[in-house]
Length: 300
Image (cartoon, rainbow, N blue to C red; front, side):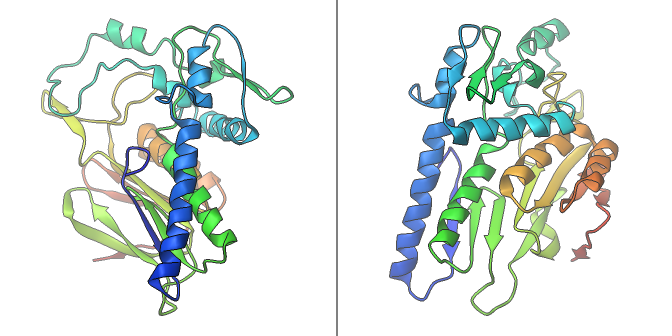
C-alpha cells in the first residue's frame, strides 16, 4: 500500500534476490514522491502551499513546480475538466450509497467557489506557487499515482532493468518485453460486468490508465452518478462509464482519463484525436464502445 493505493511492481531479472533489490529501490522512490505531493503531511511542500492560501507564495522544488506546471497545461487543453485545485471541494457527495437526492444547488455552488485552475499563480522565475484565495487547495489525486509510476519506472530503467510493469491500482506503466520476448498484454475490464474482460491489447504505448464508475457511484431517482465530479460544476459526471487512455507516460494518461470521463464521448474523443501519441477507448452508459482513430480492439 503506497499513496493510499495498491502498487504492484514487476521486473524481469535473472534471479529473485536481484529483482527484490530493484523493487525496493522503486518502492522507495514512490514513498519519496508521496512525501512531496501529500496534502496530509504538514511538512510537505504541497501542504505548505495549501496552508498559505491567501497569504503568500511558496517557493518549491523544481520537481514539484514542474509537475504543477504540467497539470496546469492539461487543465488548459481540457477547459478545466482536469483541475488540481479541485481539492478544495467540500464533501457534499457520498458514493457509498449514503446520498439519495441531489444536494442543494446553492451548496454546490458555494463548494466550487474556491476551485479554478486559472486562479493558481505560478512564478517560473522565482519558482513559487500561490493560491490567492483562503480555502483554496491543490491535490494530486488525478495525476499523482501516474507520476509516481513514471518515476519508479525511470529509476528501474536507469539501473539497467530491461523490462517490467508498474501497476498503481490499475494505472499501468510498462517497458521492455516479457521473459519469453512477447509484448506485455493487458485486459480492459467490461464495465457492464467487471468480472469479464472485453478486450485484450498488446501494449505498444508505455502506459494505460482507466477511469470508471463501475465500482464507485450513487443512484439518485434511478439515475447513475459517477464518483468522478466535474470540477467546473461540482456535479458528478454522466454519460461515460469507462475511459481508458494509452500514452507514453502514466502521468498524462492518468490526467486525461479523468478529463475525458468528465468531458463526455464527443468532446473527449475530439480532444484525444488532436493529441499526438495518445489513444483512447471510451464506453458510454449504454455500453457502446468508442475508440480513437488509431486504435484497434481485439474483442473477446
